[in-house]
View 1: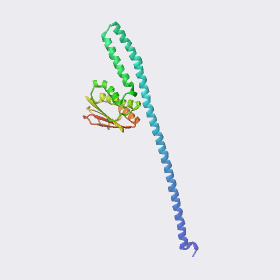
View 2: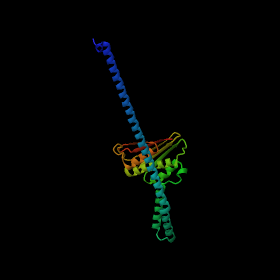
View 3: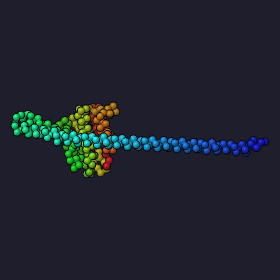
View 4: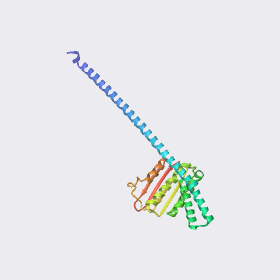
Length: 250
């Protein structure tokens, strides 16, 4: 019997081949795992870069909007209101036309309100509940607005945070006036040392949230909520009003 025909020799070669196959499969598996990890890391890095880009774009967009609002508010206050005031004073001196004087007085009041809405004065030194009260005053001509303030901790909110919260409220009220046909609105603000919760509800006609969630107003709200790293939930039923709920952790 030839040496290679001996059972011991056959078993040895089978063992060598089996070992070679096992080693080869191990190397292939290792290489596949290494490639998979590399691809996964590259995808994670790309996702992180994309997320950073979106965050930076979002922050830039919000800040650019506020800069433009400040500029327009300053133009209205320093330019338009000043000129209207001069014209009003001239009319009052000559006493030519009381209707014109009254119209100018009303125009100045409207311009002041627009300027105030665009850029609330002394935001840094005004607490959030006070800012909200000032914001709601002009809208009470259109809606019965009830407010609840549950302030359990005095939070020193940043100017940026307070401005963005007032923008959210403005957006919701504007949407309510335009689309909801509501007659009543309730605003509930709760502040604790850990979080701030805001709920704004109305008795309007309501809508299908899933079908009507891509409007410009909704996008503006979501953009600001993302900027503040908060959470936003909408509940609405046709004929039963709408509720917007926000949560911001300190």
